[in-house]
Length: 285
Image (cartoon, rainbow, N blue to C red):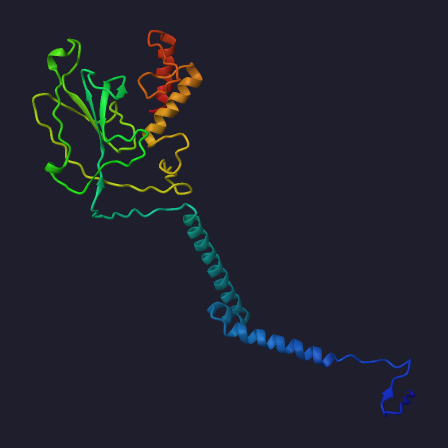
């Protein structure tokens, strides 16, 4: 028999040998409430397979809905993986837009006499050339024109001096190259030949293409924003890269490509240098 001492305030204090019981019933009630809440949430889940899996009574029906749930999760995971793979490929959508502007930049026009009779721009194949509206080191922007039509363009009258041509010259006329004002003309790869004694008209339409840089699949480079090597366009960059390879491998540069004043020109009379130039030029074709 356990004895308790009574305090003056009327409360009973258990003795040293008396055991104190914990509120086990309250813990069981909390667990039961948690199970009830979880069951209600799962049975009312917006995922239909989960709701049926919890509310089904038979093992066969539970197994069926479990298989349906697993297949659905795997299918969803596959679609997520496929769309993420497509996203990280950085696909592009080509859009065409026609813009009407009040003014357009007038292009640079380079004329090379096939008799090598002009000055200002040097081409090994066509000799000295003359460029109109070129922007070589000029701070001012290129000329602009707000008009269209044959009467608002550039008109040139060329005196080609046909009698002064050498008998070994392949043709008589001029080479005309039209390019952006801030880029270097490339008469070897671009341009048209015009014959003396005729009037030649050239109609132009400006098309602007904006390509996306890395990490998109084209991995294009903006030469206007990243002009660390002073390349104005892709062709200029390729030609300068060719000259760097020639200078590194041969110790000289190709005289038929744009060169700097400090570069040593290869001697075309030396067969090993000519052979090396031909071999390395094939790397860029």
